[in-house]
Image (cartoon, rainbow, N blue to C red; front, side, top):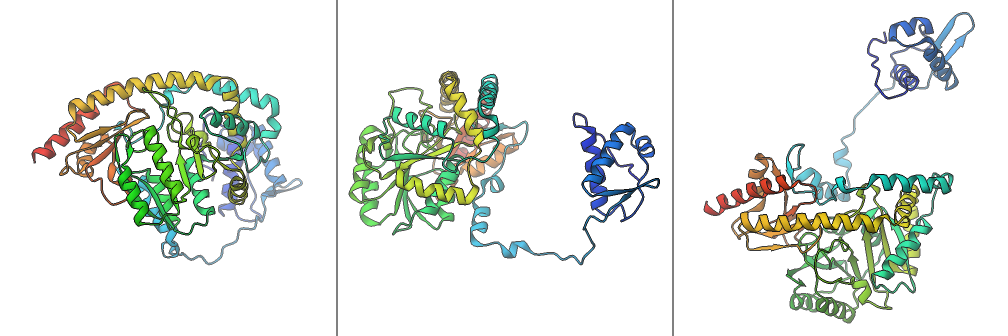
Length: 482
């Protein structure tokens, strides 16, 4: 008895012994009214001090797991777990359409995933080696010293007020007119987009977007029952003639666009096209959801204001922002900037779903900004990502034959191979050689893109960048020769 107890280093021994005995009792290994070994006996068996056992027995008795009889010892209590007939449910048969579709669209389950030791081009997360932990710790300590008790309690569904005020100024600095608008803090882009689609009643459940586009947006749109029409892209954004034609031929309830450092292509929509796109959407009275993906990661050229800035005093544009691809994706902070009345309704939806985004996370992020760390971090990160971006472009141009290579910023490049080169089949061959990337077909709205791939470079070393691209290049050439 008790021979399977193992001590875990770095964890309080009292907690370990108490949890072990609780499980011993609740799993039925200890019968009701069974006498326990004395603290002296058990300390010898487990090889721990008797004082630890005295504390554990006392706490177990307080919690009702054991009881003590004077001069007789400690005994197992009746803890309310009885043996009853058991049966099994086939839960797969009970999954609704939404769950089945979510499972079908889940790339983490369907696509080849990078294993430890592989060269992983599939990720477009920021490089954690660039995170300035000392300033994050300082921000945490600063904020906790100011209002620690408040931060550990319930917060507000709308978000942490100082962060909302900061983001309001942040949006105004981008040129967005925030008069009559407000901000809702969310758990990243995913929750923001999901809340919007679940809250809007649109006459036509049809979304107009770029093709290819963000896979998560495709997935969430379909889960909400929307049909999707994607418009092909040139080097400066969507093809306007196709965009206009789609508007003439089909009625749309919403448009979803990522004008800057688009995912997955990395393309930046030109100012001229931004003006024309907004003119067309206004003409057809179609609200726009703008994804502010990677706007800060510009490596060359002049600043390009978001579409929300071009919208002026109008309220038809819903802007979704996130720092996940720039700064600390583990914190999961995003925001919606939109018409004040819309935000007021979305706050209620947010409250009904998960009460609020972590106040502690919001407060630490705000303090990090307040301390002036973001600008310093961004300058350093942009310098490193710019270097890697240029290196990736150089290597891809040199080693991988392709029809088109795009990506003028951000953390990834997008490649269109020759028509008869299936990127998913090539991926299988590269995977066997320790290289993984994202096959581009998952980003297309029309089942196209079989000859495309996305190459994330942010988290690979210079040596891995060269070796990985060389391996992909050899696999592509082999397929072209075949």
